[in-house]
Image (cartoon, rainbow, N blue to C red; front, side, top):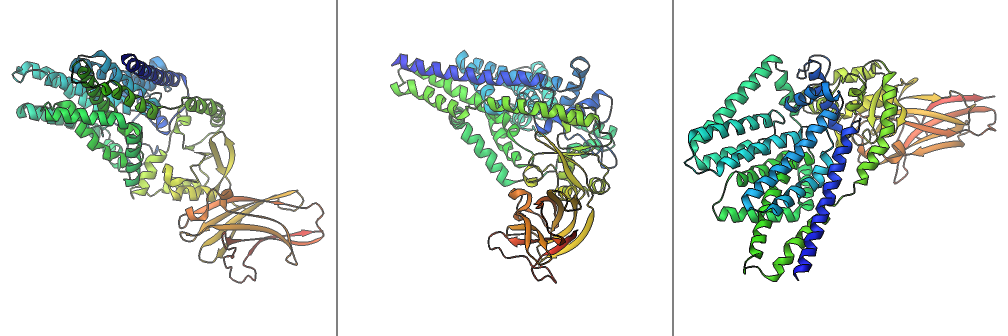
Length: 618
């Protein structure tokens, strides 16, 4: 029986070591990968580069570049400080991120080693933290979240150390500890200002212990933090407030919060149950300290994950404190096994539950391998395109600009969020698109067709992009747009649903085997039904020669997803017979209901179609 339990534990340890190997491998691979791995990396790199060059990173809406950091400066400044040594690419920032994850794991181990006097419980908790898919996904990136977590958790660790001292500890000891954890929490808040759970937990734990000292901490944190804020805001002429507060006023999506919380629960149900069991036991025993308060404030702060742009990074503190409390529960069960209180089933329950947890956390590292292998050549080719293209370029992948010595003149997500909240009127980018001011606009595959999911551009932006630009090249996941004004502007209405804006033909004769027609349509209102566009080449008698009927963009962007007023560019191909008889030929276009086949009405047309152009074949 004992050997069977030991075998179960051996499988648990092996599984954790394998997951640890995945995480360490990906973190190491990320250090040498020269291109962006995640959307948010590029803009963070750009701001770090700007600091290294002595350029401001906080500014208002007044002039170029339209990019103001929406993160405080600590992580960016640390990465900038490493650039003279490690280069101005991602290496310094990713190294900080990697080291931060290891530091948090080490602190988890240390806390549990002291709390439970068990090395195994500490190692298990640290391995579950590092092996979790959330940390795996984030460890290769240059982002501020894990760096902020390291400062926050280190601050909690110092408070936890002080909390273990007797209540009669002298003022000098408190002054030393308070200086340490106040400094660490300031670094936390000036790395990512939404990381408020740790300092709040410290305040609650200190208040429970000694209200006067809690107030001392609160005043010190508020005074120093407030002074730093005012100094930065004054030095940047209000740019710091704009970047940190105004440009972070994103939309709250309850459905996103629900999806992220459910994913967290479904990924870590066993660790969550063990953590809750441990937390409740310590509350019953009146052993409530900073760790228990940290669990309360962290899980309360998860409501912020409903903000647009949030992802697993909003759950890092929850993962860390969950692993600590779960480790306490595991150690408690180990202690019970050494006494007569343990039943036979308890010998198997914990390792079996942990095996289930491992199964739920399991992930395939080949996804990351394939992603990097697939994107590497595309990034290389894109870099060559950028190198030979002068002028201001708008790119969804802002890292491609930052690593190609191109200026990031427009922070796509930030200004799209500002536009949605009514704080930015989009005149700069919309007028620039109309005038062809940007030689290239680079989107990633799928962004144009799913604007509301990615929210990196507004409907108005992609509508203007389709109106004045066309896809000129596809490189891997990148869709590259170039100015392409329509050759013919022509207005035609199809009922109260859709309208024709204009078109171009290539070639402008019927001498080729294929006639390519580029047409820009516009939705006159939100459309509850799917419509199919038809493009017909007909004889003067009305007989059809060839046609191209299909839903927009090959069906991947049906009219039910268009916004009112949105313009969509589509290309139609008409196969031209080689033996066309002499006479007139007409290109006729229109729309019909995809289900019923009923055409949308066209005023003055007998067949509810409008003529684009006429060809004469002699």
